Length: 364
Image 1: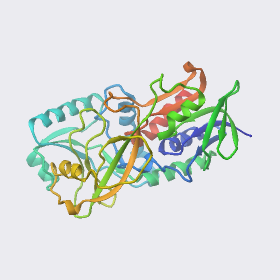
Image 2: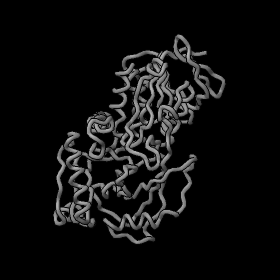
Image 3: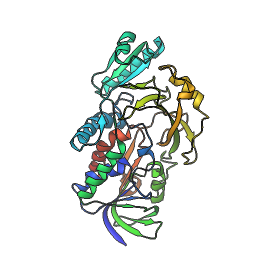
Image 4: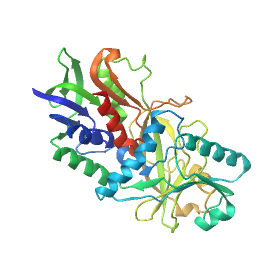
């Protein structure tokens, strides 16, 4: 049996960032991951967008951690040669109703201390992005993109350089509480005794909370998996900004948007629909939905749109439900001292990874 000080479960971008943060101060920090390497699920299956913080309710963790997080991650990327681009984005509107939504987004963003927001007209849009169809647009200059794999690679490297141990192919199958801490039991038969456990298991974080004895149904911590697909096009070139429609009014997703990668290649997505199983297969069942959404802001022919990739988000917000914030909490109140849950860390989790790590540090 191994004895460790801090056991972190899950090596997505959040777990890696927490391992880096805590290993700067604490000894015997161990990060375990059931997959063979880091970021095999949500952390590597997303738009790689760094968000500004305009969408989230004032005072929410998502708003606070995102606005601070984007500046932290730009600084980290610059200092550590992680490829990124502060390209900015345009949220486009094509009628007065959508303009009203832009105005509300601008007000909300300013309440959240997002800087540089500006609503521009059609001619100004054309000067910035000549291919985009828009009567109006909200300019969001702080938004950007990042190479998420390089980011995770750097976080892993720094954590290990600080003395943290990262062990892959270690699946937690049960957790037992004791007077001294917790016993984590693994599928390979190993047992770790840990004084503190930090649950960063992403899509499976509610299952880890359940293992320790937290009633996830009663505490409203059951996750709902939401799948999103992406299409790509090699025909559309020379786009310099991310292009977003006005967001879904129910807050489930931000609309099928145009993103660019660091090579300038264009892709569209994601859509959003709830699923019951972990399945990354794709077909063209939603292609007409994509075409209809995309053609509102840029011209594209069906044959120039090809399947790309998909991802699954771990949402606390159930289908038809209201906004749910990140859940980041030390669980002494529930009878589990030194057990820290990070549940429902969906978008803007990538943007917030460094600030979430600092938030967890405060809880230890």
